Amino acid sequence: MASSAALASARAVSRELAPASARHLAVPWTSLDTPSAIADWDALSQRASEPNPFFASWYLLPSLRAIDPQGEIRVFRFEQDGRLAGLVPLSAEQRYYRWPFPHLRNWVHANCFVGAPLVAKGSEHAFWRALFAHADEARGAALFLHLGHIPLSGALHDALIAVSTEQDRYHALVHREDRAMLGSSLGPDAYLEAALSAKKRKELRRQHLRLSELGALAVERRDDAAGIGEWTAAFLTLEASGWKGQAGSALASSPATTALFTDALAASATRGQLERLTLTLDGAPIAMLASFLAAPGAFSFKTAFDERYARYSPGVLLQRENLTMLARPEIAWTDSCAAADHPMIDHLWRERRAIGRYSIAIGGPARRAAFRALAALELARSPQGVGR
Image (cartoon, rainbow, N blue to C red; front, side):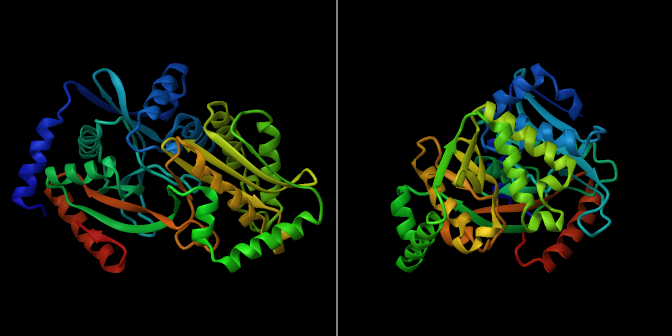
């Protein structure tokens, strides 16, 4: 529960940042699949407080077309002074992970690695007030609002905490993890030297030399749309040739994920927001990486390597080449989009990005009291969660 001093301070900020005119509504996602709506959406992405390519039109629309063809997911739109200033997909869920607790949540899926809403800079506080008001009004049977894959720093996160405090709205950080991030003022060579021991760097040089003895070894880096169809097809084939294909979890294992990957890469490449990195042996790809560019950040989306050459660590050799991301003047950091404690990237990328899940009270006193009891039970089970 917030102190009276904190509430007074937050309410003062609230008055300062109150919008001159604002409105919000939740609409079927299909209503946004039009040229004019996409143009407004793209403009919002360019001025977003927290960059999130996974909620950009060129990624979210292919996701929805592939996963929700019936159009059940709704998109919450926040408008300020007649201009789109915030957007997040929402779903009404009947289960909260393994528990039968209905709730509202930001819609994310297995190939969406950031759940931060797209919000215009300067509109962060107003957006959260509008979203919370919507959740209160349209809650149905939902016991709370759940926000997954939220970066735990920055203006958008700070506004989330401030508005929750301002409204005396109980909120709980029910899970957090620290995933590998690349963010340094060092150049690629200096970073590699600082990150890896001399022994490990020597081993990488040895693996590169041995691999090059098998044929012509080359690295190709592209951030245009030339040959994107062929590159995408090669990636899908390469990934499916390994353990993911055997397990049925490769992108090519499902028509939905195949379509999502193909459409999103084509659209991001056309917009200049895709970097493709390829390690080839005699012209054939043996390691590939697709990264989304959303300045000031970048996001390592998908990587694959030919497991026949595993002894030479082609994936690690490709990540060594990927350190050139540090030399891009418009990119300050790169999110690995990898699970915490990843066995490969955690040893190479030294910085960490905190990502969490918040659950937030909605509705009237009885609903809020029930949610608070549920949150207390969850926090007791999760040492990574922190009650607020």
